[in-house]
Length: 336
Image 1: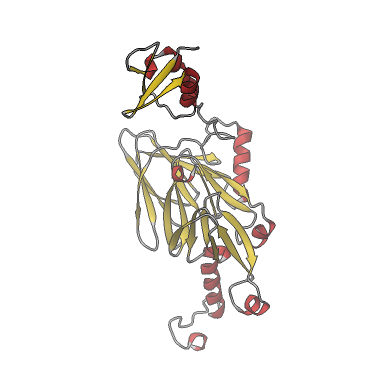
Image 2: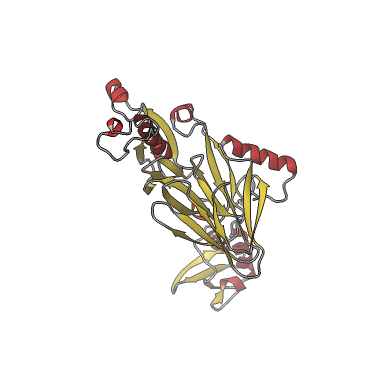
């Protein structure tokens, strides 16, 4: 492989003389690109380096192979749906489906639909229609662990034109559309956060591996896990805040105010510190800590807090004994 000495022309600048092995080493290290020119004893005039057989093969050898696929099954490809969210405090999402497209939703989320939409109840989330009956039962059993039904409903457009189907929030708050493709195909959320999604999104469970977070985190050991490449819609109470945490950045919050987070975010529970604060502060004994990097979603009014206030008000008023609810006399009104 000794073709004498070579000169290289790179961006109008000349380097050399160089031996053949030196040029090959420069190609393999990335110092010489395919746009370079060379001349030497074997090529007495400036010649594109790719036209010199001695060097052309080195560029093919220097091209790195593609990275290996990530472990586990590839995220499913979901239908590409259009949507619009309506309302302020009590929202609903209207999804427009092209012919053949479909959406999946939790039982009880359905609001209204066009006549061309067909409803079908399925085990699990319908993301893997080729699954056998046992696999579907296992998928349904996982959903039961999160407090959801064994079944989900698939809404398919069987017409020849675009059709609409809508799903409503179960209590005051906000509906959050999330494209899982922007979050590496996976999102973790509180157990009752999922509302609906494009067909192809997998709705499973994720185990909280930390004992403290599982026992005192407000969400228990089980979280909902959304996977796929497409749109999913989650619901939370009050005002929703999205935060992007930098690497090492930590955020502390009430354990019930966490809605969703990317899997790369660290999640743990900490003691509030101080017996007086813990016992009389009214904020509970623990708070959640989130550590970046990653994106998190927070809610200002967890449903448990709303339900607790409603229950306390009902108990204080005697469970609706017929008094004047609007009276400043409260239970001492004439109707008591």
